[in-house]
Image 1 (cartoon, one colour):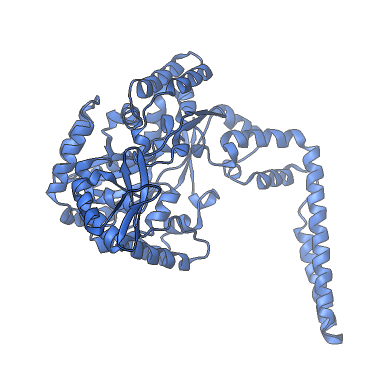
Image 2: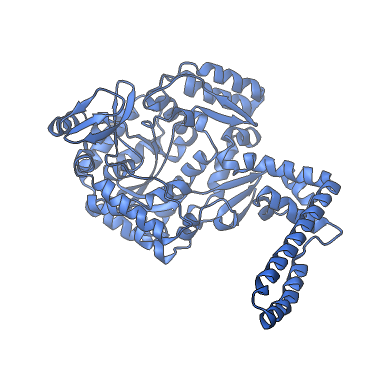
Length: 533
């Protein structure tokens, strides 16, 4: 195994906002608490320790005991759950949807990043305990986002009608997905291991929540990973005071709107990731998860006949907290209310919306966690590396958009020079004297000279493109081989980790795949990892 790294901003796949955050641009500092450096965790620990009550630790411990009641738990995970009762214990967490069979590869990278960070923290701060956690997004209701995974270019999909929280869904019908998956893989050892893992997860557990917990636990239980489900009555009871401020005072809405506006003013290149609603909670009951809205003095659930007065809704919240489901704005707050958490590890889109939330956290008097961009990986096999070396294609070049990738290589290997930059520069020099002449005779001719310059430059551009096109035809075999391997490594012209499922790499590497990731990924290095296997 060999490892290469390159800056995230050199990949072309990360937003201006994320690249500026990683560069610790001064104008972004008001939007986060502490930057994720090892030495900065000391103050984060102190801040969280002072604000996190023992009652919340006790409730968390009891809830996790119930959630793990029918799960085969490793000793390390058991120890971590017990440690959560102790005031010297803190968490690092990542979250993810209940994607079928983990979904895209980055599911694993998120969790490995989280576990590896807790190891680094334990070395730096040995008197504390650090527990890695995975938050299952059981209450999400977008079934279309999670009902499939990709395997060798094919989409294996769970076809059924679904409403309400995906975690409540029964696993009926997944036998067909299992059969399709099994038929695609064959029957050698690594394939049999994957088939058995899928079968036990989805055919022996009756809900998607249970299946996902089993799967994540099987993959990571020896590391001590603790899996938490926020769809829990006792945990949600701790959220009641904050939910009331969101619903009845609209604190979240007001603070996040202002933060988003401020963030947008920092740079035109920043895209606002999420917009808050006046009420950032869904109502969850009898297979529905619909938004709560306010109309005058009445609170109602959209697309239903359910409504309350203000006092009735307060009573409903006090008596049935499990029926109130936080949205993308409120869920991060919920997480930090119930966990002794120091750091959230997420993808670029997640970090972008967390940057809108700091003012809301301050108003709610909850410490804002450190935000760490998860590890990203491009895995390249020995066979693929041999092809790249024969074509003299660098790893850095692979990240170019395909037309730029091809054009750069064609220019490099062509026996003629197809770069007209010198000619364009010479043209500009020639037109300088023409501009001077026009100004001395009749200034109205300046526009005509400018038009002629533009026309001639466009002519050179057109000629350059035609020559490139001709060379591509001439070097067609080389272009085909280049694009084939780029398409293998960047399926759909996107990052490998956003498309491929872990099963493809597991087939090649077997049980060593996840240990290889633990060795390769360094969460605080803040660079894109290229893994050669």
